[in-house]
Amino acid sequence: MARIKNKDKEIMLAAVKQDGHALAYASPEFQNDKEVVLAALKQDGCALVYASSELRNDKEVVLAALKQDGRALEYASSDPRNDKEVILAAVKQDGCALVYASTELRNDKEVVLAALKQDGCALEYASSELRNDKEVVLAAVKQNGRALEYASTELRNDKKIVLAAVKQNGFALICASSELRNDKEVVLAAVKQDGDALEYASSELQNNKEVVLAAVKQKGRALEYASIELRNDKKIVLAAVKQNGFALICASSELRNDKEVVLAAVMQSGRALEYASSELRNDKEVVLAALKQDGDALKYASSAPRNDKEVILAAVNQYYWRALACASSELQNNKEVVLAAVNNNGYALEYASSELWNDKEVVLAAVNNNGYALEYASPELQNDKEVVLAAVKQNGYVLEYASSELQNDKEVVLAAVKQDSDALKYASSAPRNDKEVVLAAVKQDGDTLIYTSLELQNDKEVVLAAVKQNGYTLKYAILELQNNKEVVLAAVKQCGTSVRFIGEDLQKDETFIAELTALIESDM
Image: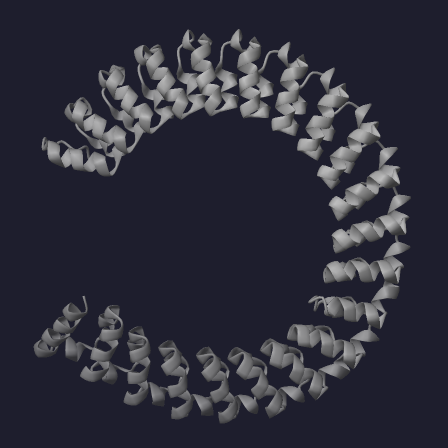
């Protein structure tokens, strides 16, 4: 954008009021105009970067910027950065603006406390002296426990401060001294706030039952950080998997083979079955419990449950239609099981036996649920009018999978295009040349005119119906109809951009162009 040199102050004021950064394109004169700059800062404090050096040193201007955005302090000159009133205004709006304050003010307790009240992590920018001040650090960690990271080494070993930090954010334990990471009271407070803080406890406390129990009750997966000994403690592991079934992955191999533990895990999250022992993945009671929670758990069961009719039915009834894919070939050929699956989702037909692909009752149930199941029906049933009609009424597009004979059947094609006009592209040439069929399609979507025969693309009634639905389809009409006033007017009325497809003869007809112009203007 070219720099604005126009001296019309009203224009400049209007620009910066709409977007403060418009000041970037102002002339130096306006970048040094206090009224213009103040208007810009009211919209975006960081527009201070474009003000003249003189105004970036003006206290009133800088304060106006900070009121809108504390980070604007970055663009102020050195004098305002050393002005306590200015800095207080900045840090109250954005604590981390403390980073731009003078060294002197970063050592000012009042300023720093104001910054920490807004953002505890602003402690990072305080002087080393104040990072060693108990009152200051306590204020910081109470606002954000992770601010403990910026405290002095001495205060990271102060129990009162560390307790305040971990109560606000358990992960602050990572910043505590090794001594306090071995303090039971501190670590308990941390894991109660966030169980994963157990990762940063001393190895001694990672082996403490009370501490680990508190951690896994808050977050089951914290079991990962417990000692090997406690990952083999049934009480602890039970508490963990009840909170998060996937904690089973962290349990000892012995407890992954404990039925009570595994049942508790899969009842919380069925897919935790993946981490059970091979023996329990073969246990019908365990597998059924998992499936009750999540049908998807079937993929982790061993072969025996996958060949159990009750198990497979439990899975498909849990809305897990892919259960049929995991079932044994015997059950993939079981009509009761397959019917349950396809009634849940017709696509399950894909995993049925070839024998059932040819079972009319099964296939009808599948296509009534999901027309796309027709893809997996036997060629015989893809040629069955009742089956195909049911499929295309559910999803017209599946006409693609019908036999060539039925793609030529007017009743079938009509049903398909009424459900989805695009199905016309899968019809044979005869229906594409049938006016009733084509009219049904183009009335739903004018673009389907492209799939019709040349004869019907030359039919005024058909083309009119198409352009009334989508004026842009004038593009597919023959030249004669692109020069037909009634057709063109209907097209333009529906879609103004279709004017680009008007025939040359009409483009030369001044009377018609005047009429067309009036139509367009009346629709604006």
